[in-house]
Length: 342
Image (cartoon, rainbow, N blue to C red; front, side, top):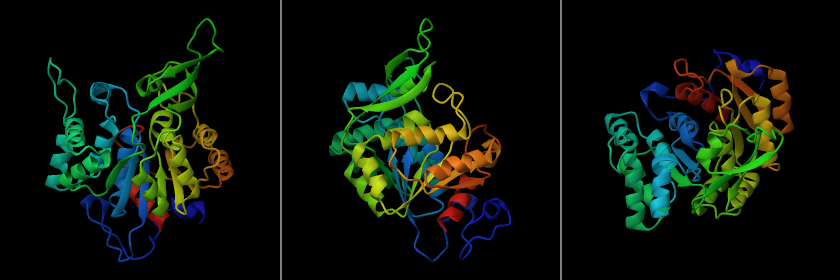
């Protein structure tokens, strides 16, 4: 398919017309929905899930579990549990657009404001952790929350144990600007003043969530990104079993690029640099499609060559939110995802 075919606003969709994204309806195509697995964390994964739930009714989110800040970090430290924050955001993104779904999404995301110990805890974090304590199993607890919400998909942790991100960072020592410093923690990596060279996980060989491995093996499409590149996107590729599953799956792999650089993590990164860094961390992972936004590709031919070096076709489309800078628009993403999956 040519680039012009993707960029044309008059492009005819394959097959019968589907329901409008803004209505919150399910796709009306009588063909089976594709089985889709989306990997990542934070706001980037939430945007992708908000789009994908309008495209398929067979959706699984595989979420990073390395957060060590805020409410998640406090619960993790106090109770020894997986950090629930990114899992909570994924569940909220999968809520329907009706009154029930939006109300429960708001409840999950609500944070207490006080001068006491509850300050800044998210209700959804407490609910998830309570179910984990009652049921004794992380996946069961998440499935129960999903049923309560009427979530349009399943949410799984990438690993069954909490993880830490470590990073080698350049330029933290003013006296030795070429020196490499190692820092530890998702929050610390996300806000570093230095230049992140690479990241790793501790432990380096954590157990992957078995249900996530099954979902990836059975998927038709795997969607990676958008999101914080070093702390949400790449960590999923650093779990050895998970990365191996991504390499071996028969699913096609779609990588959604961020809309720009992120202060602290990817200062100065071009779209090509994002791809090169990901390839350096997962050198054997083949990508089939790279999706980028029309307004955030300074050199399309350069990006196309870099995508092709990973085995990928480059798709450039309007996927940016017109109101929020550097945010993806779920309705635009849904339209483009549907076209690509067709």
